[in-house]
Image 1 (tube, rainbow, N blue to C red):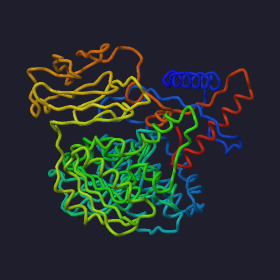
Image 2 (image 1 turned 90 degrees about the vertical axis):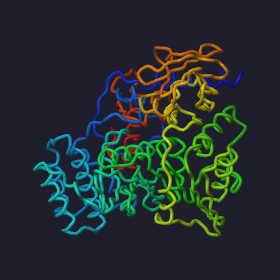
Image 3 (image 1 turned 135 degrees about the horizontal axis):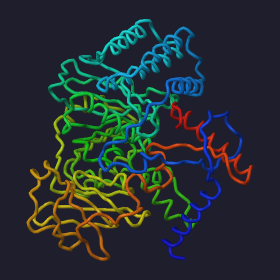
Image 4 (image 1 turned 180 degrees about the vertical axis):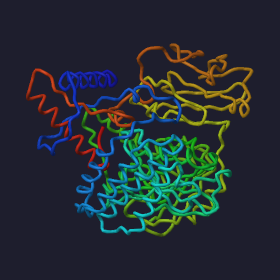
Length: 557
């Protein structure tokens, strides 16, 4: 059987089995029960309406905040399973924080909502610290004072500098998420500053702990953001969405120079620097990964980590594994400056990771790459050592050459180019563009794409009088509503949007992990003809809820 036919048959059979065996006829949302003891199956997941129609822009749908009591209960349960079975906080502290949360549940003006969420995050943080035995009266008193100011219509963060903890509602599950932000003493909201995103390393013994990344390192002349990003989650999948959401929140509440946003981190933070940058290259002027992993073949070469090749799905497994590696998307860093540090004696993340990534970038002819290999182990670098190099660079918003490679439409944007269709899901999609007259574009595994051509792009990129050459086909397209759109028509290209009707698009394309990347709902089925199957489905859904709340220290929707 041909490979494609085999794959499609397998996916169709799997989908049919899931729908027929797990479909609920009626639904309810009771409180989760204790962990069941059945072998793992698949939970029932239903994307929310907000997840089904994502905006093509970087913006995420605004979730509804969870109830105060549900959030507090989930946080306390998380403290019990966070790794060290922490004791509950002292009763008087818990009571004081609950009273404060009750006060902060009152509606405030839209301009103060960000501050209100940040105060709720700080209440959670103080409860967590109290459980560890580290909490002074001064911290609680400061929080009460800030809450009182908020309730009188004042923003307690206005004019505040130093390291602050802030919060926002997650675009993934609507829960309160935290990040740490260092605001320099000379911050002036009338003068935009550079933003350095500093990604924390792996928590190891604090794997499931909240508030990783706090306090953010301070830096003169720049804002420094350290997102929690779901803790020790490698900044992939759900964690990637939280990094992007925390950047958006800082840009919304502080004066940020959008052309001077940088990304750095050590160890897992170095991994995240590579991964986030290749997925969103147009957001960053420069990156500085330190001792991060970037290419799974480094593990193969060093420790012989191989996949079985005797399976009919070997090709798919290899593609799925490779597609999680930053090295697979090195092309996307064409216009991003890179400074990479790695120790040649690193036994935790072998130096082959950095060597492979740097070699790929240089082989592509990219000249903004600096590599420093030292005779050290798994060594870090201070932000001060890296910052002077980072701050020299500015983002090029409208580069004349754009390279885009992706395995998902969700990540199908680079600068002013966006993929709108990719016909073969088990193969990478590629687009190369060079702006001239005509604009020359080559594609592979692309069925539709757009050029984002608004007023700012019009000023930076003169419209081509000779049109666009797409895979050798001349297309005389014109912008409409800020877009120039192209669609494949058989073996040729023409101007226009993708076909109407149901189709894969960013945020609604699969695989199953896509259900966890925007607002979703776990449904407990109460109908069906087979009580045994209903019981298994119910318990498996409860297991999923328990694991989600344990892993992320937040209530599951």
